Length: 336
Image 1 (cartoon, rainbow, N blue to C red):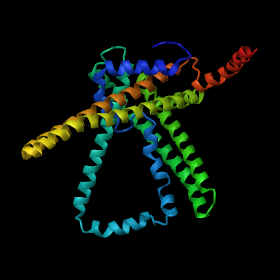
Image 2: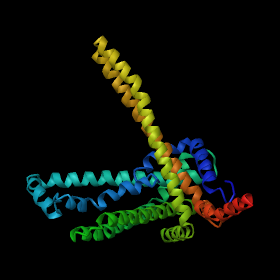
Image 3: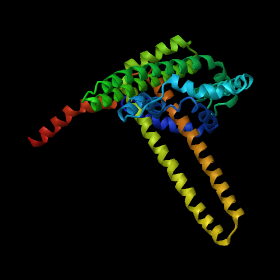
């Protein structure tokens, strides 16, 4: 990777794109890794922010939110009518399915990072899969710590906001905005640290405590660069969303025309055929785009983490602020 200390994101994103496109064998791992986290800031917005203030907003709109006890009283009588054996079987099946999905997602996450950091340009899928299996438990610990931190931040953010609503504070809206922004910043930091730790565990073979320590140290030294990278990844998420929408529109137009033709002809079988084809193409487009996007995001975070180790990296906003005096001096010279 290039070693220019100034142009950080352009080089990282360019190298990440080339890597993600050339190593298309990693895309299936990217698809399944997205079950845990896509490596994007959108995860933070969707993974907890909606639940932070739901109860408080409901209270503000005078809509009662049922408590856990009320829900148990509602569900209890209907559950009692079901034989205990079926409840145990359903719980066991549910647990096995969740555990299997979690295993596949975390192993895929490890395999994806291993493939990104592999010296072999082809990134042998069998070799990276073995590495993903080997680091499952450390990645599980990182994911668990990330969820615990997000949960603690959610609770810490919701409590003062709920107290303000209960007291009828006129500054509730301002408090909501401040609390929400603080939640996003802290949660984003936790997610970035978790990604850094996952890269350290997989690529360097560090233990879980050392990986978390290295990740926290890296983030504390380069927190501005990390937040700026999160914004870059967020911009990529927006572009991916637009690409998804464009693909849907492109597929929808000919499908609509064919359906109109089938309706005029009066062939029901033809209509179902084109609907099935449209659905299959749309699913294929979504899967391919999601796989590429997740691989690209993880490539960006992995390459950035490697770049931040022992190298001088300057944040974009810092470079802009440093350049402002020079701009004023040049303008003064021209006026003189």
